[in-house]
Amino acid sequence: MSENQNHKQALYTLVSVFFFWGFIAASNGVFIPFCKTYFSLDQFQSQLIDFAFYGAYYIGGLFLFVFSSISNKDMMNEWGLKSSIVKGLMLSAIGAVAMVIAVNGASPNDSTAFTYILGALFIVALGFSLQQAAANPFAISLGHPDKGSHRLNLAGGVNSFGTAIGPILVSLALFGTAASANINLEEEIANNSITLTVVQYLYIGVGILFLLAAGLFYFSKNLPDGKQDASFLGASKAMTSLISITIILILIFYQVFRQYVGLGDGESLSAESESLILNLSLLALAIVVGGLLISNVFARRDSNGWGAMQYPQLVLGMLAIFTYVGVEVSIQSNLGELLKTSAFGSLNDTQIAPYISMYWGGLMIGRWTGAITVFNPSDKLKKWLYILIPYIAFGIVLSVNAISGFEVKHLFAFAICVAIQIAGFFIGKDKPALTLKVFGFLGLFAMLTGLFTTGTVAIFAFLSGGLFCSIMWPSIFSLSIKGLGKYTSQGSAFLVMMILGGAIIPPIQGKLADIIGIHESYWVTVFCFLYLIIFAEKTTKIFQKS
Image (cartoon, rainbow, N blue to C red):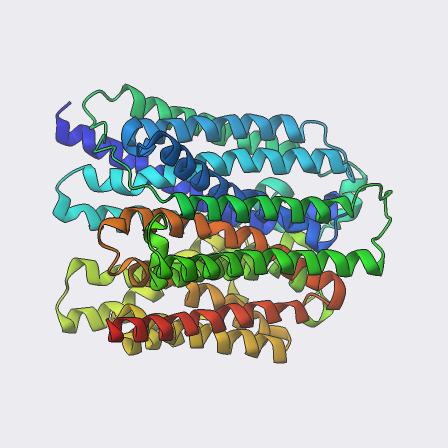
């Protein structure tokens, strides 16, 4: 096999890894409401699935940074990108085995089994964090550097496809075919007609795929090792700050989880405990925000030992990534419970999947559209592609749902939301700050519309959050690392750590839902989009001054 063919084979395998990330992350949107019913959880507890999954990304990134700081070597470059991906795949495979064990014989209302499930998801995502840290630069290395961005966009498009079909496949695995959509889940669980056994089969399959992918990378001798200069730019004060924030977060959430200790089956928390959990969760948010802002204040006074944290655009960008991931995850993670209410159709767990799929499909639509400029089309062609590509992607999402046996007529009206997103792309003019601001305002308007209405209008307003979140990651990323110079790589690592937002913001909304109602809890998303608008404005002013 020629080296070029070998590289192509590795690229296709690498693209499948991107698919896994999207597939499992998006399928949590179906798994969360199912676990809430199966284990009799409150809304906050159900959001701990996101807490475990996205918290692992932060812990994984922090571990690499601390380990590199102590050894004074960039461990990713020391191991090599190829070896790092293999290690990440093996770790995720271990997590898949742990999931199989965790759900084996898990009975309804078994809180211990749910805890084990969270632990297994944490291990799977810990492997993902290592894979993602290495996969992007590795994709660039698999061929000519000038085509590196094209390969990343291919991988990103497949990742988005995984997010669109993940909820559908997991729903079919849990509930059977779409024809059984009118089943009573609680009765089926009580009769043992629906159990977590199917999750075992799913993770056995996923675990095998992880091992096959790891084997292909490991035994492909002609692939580049991806080893680079392992010299490391230390940032001892930044490391101390991040470790301190982490320790405080651990102490806070230890107190949160203690509130659930000793509760019997069917027993609810007291009003005092509910308020305490919400206040502690908000304190955790304040620790992250305050800790990073205070760190930047000290770093700007004396940059020695702070590394990339001396740059305000980077620290503000860390908070923007935190907020963006948090709102993107929180909208869909709480959507299943919202759709169960009478004001939103009184849907049951088996009918939710098409909506979760369309939400993540909105991200796919936006990302495919955002990738158009990479291929340098003429201005005239680009305008046409801005119109055609979103509706092609929209059609693919509808087709996947229809082929799976779900009714899709009620989703046709989402085409109006797609048209609004297209207008946003034209207004944004491929400028990161302007695009982020435009989509931030569109997201803010959508959330307010959803809050002040009910029924179909509100559902599509909340679903459109996926469309408006779709291009925020690259926009925030490019603005945050601008002007960092030799600290660009370190700043990028700090930004990836802030996927932590997906672990903290959804539980806050979940507990708010327990106290004031699921619909009203979406006020959390309003404040998230508001900050993203502020970030776009602040960075514009920072760069105007420099």
